[in-house]
Length: 118
Image 1 (spheres, rainbow, N blue to C red):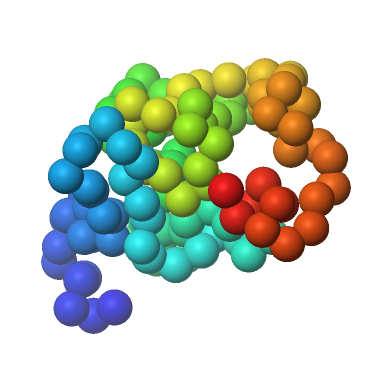
Image 2: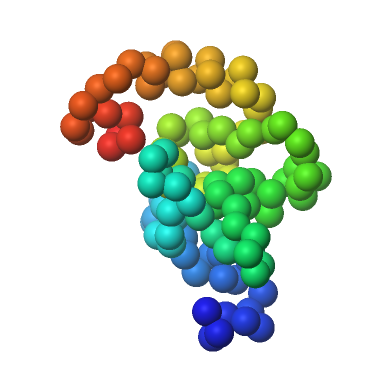
């Protein structure tokens, strides 16, 4: 971590993102996980402050978003490791639940049929 001490946070963040040749595809977070249960990427913003990688990406591209209490960042692509700002949008918990239901992620599936593996 010491080698990153004086590097701007945005550079540290983008160093952990794989951006494919087609920039409209998912940009995959290749850093650590925020939580293993849901598979979201995790990013150490500063010191002990950690943020979900997709939320940090959204905040970088939507500075007015920073500090919105109760606002969630959702994925159009349904890929928890995606940080492509074009795939992200702000929503409420109700929006998140509706998305989960409409995409069938509320149904318990096993193995490679589980939404986590999609």
